[in-house]
Image 1 (cartoon, one colour):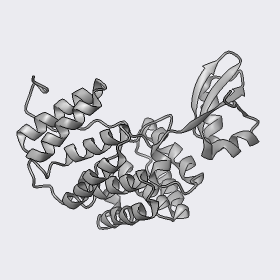
Image 2: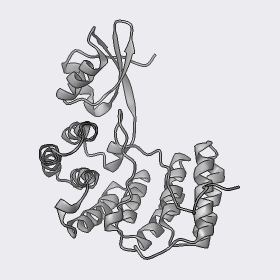
Image 3: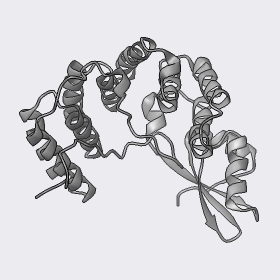
Image 4: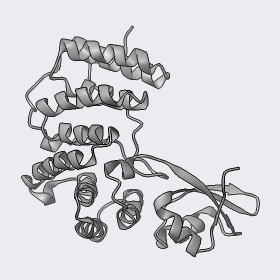
Length: 271
């Protein structure tokens, strides 16, 4: 079966997200990668690409089998490592994912640090995870900050917050928003909710940003949805807003609960 019609190129497909309402994939920080010279084996690329297709068809177990094969063929193949970690997390096989994340870190001390940190969080070792997030920050600090793209800067702000300096993380986000006037409006709108995430950060690690555990709320209003979203954002709340007769149903992370209740937003208790 041909996966790509042209030359084989590796690609990834992840469902990990950092914020509700928008998405932030687990970025592979190519600028920081220490191994730019390795050319993946073509067979490993083919297996990775087929695994991604299987994953998109919700055949995750089969995808993991193929990714194992790809890594056995080419143990330095980074895309297969990132994919297999994400897929194993989705299958709740966190200990298995930790094994692959450990190896990923050995072949790529920057990208691997992010995945190893998340893998350690998944097995409730947040303090150990922060050690590797600090390594990720160290990798970034070796680069001229002004050469980084806006999403790399956002990730620096997030990781800075997670490693214990929320005040600095908030300042970094504010700087991105004020100093990147050349960014398109959609990119600025993508960045803005990170400020609320950082401002309301509760010490839950990188997974506080990446996992979508939400509760249901209700706001009565005759305003249009864009006005409601702006109102919530300006009051420090990120929300998934669903239009209903007489108002809007909101999906909020628990970190935004207190702010929502102060605005008179009603929490919908589970029955």
